[in-house]
Image 1 (cartoon, rainbow, N blue to C red):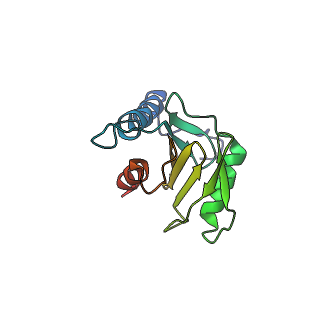
Image 2: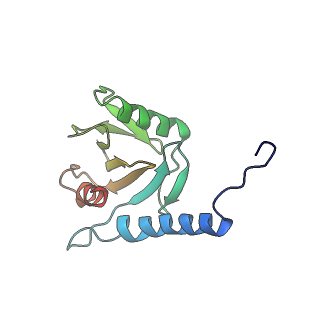
Image 3: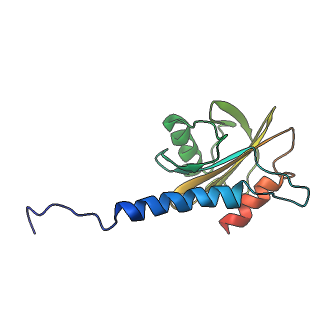
Length: 147
């Protein structure tokens, strides 16, 4: 009715539970051992399409709204020739991707980054070391989680 104020269909408890589940997802599915040798990501996060961080590992670098906006532009323009992207102030050289509309891979001198876009979030995994994205279990783990 006109004049009635909007009442959200969720409670603070529901919102708190959603945040808790997002953090649990990062902790249990992204920051877990990825192979039999115990390799793990250096950091990981779930970030909303608007740049708001839903959940992150302790070591995840602060991602700016501008960095998130630039990532969303790469996803929107699957033919993007940007050549690089930045997460947390670190510039990554973009690697060839089978589907830029939902997957970005990059490398930098200190490691690499795998990013997958979902309906509501961007899942980001960062690893240390000079390992190519396809060789690191991170890319495989993110792909497996997104299927």
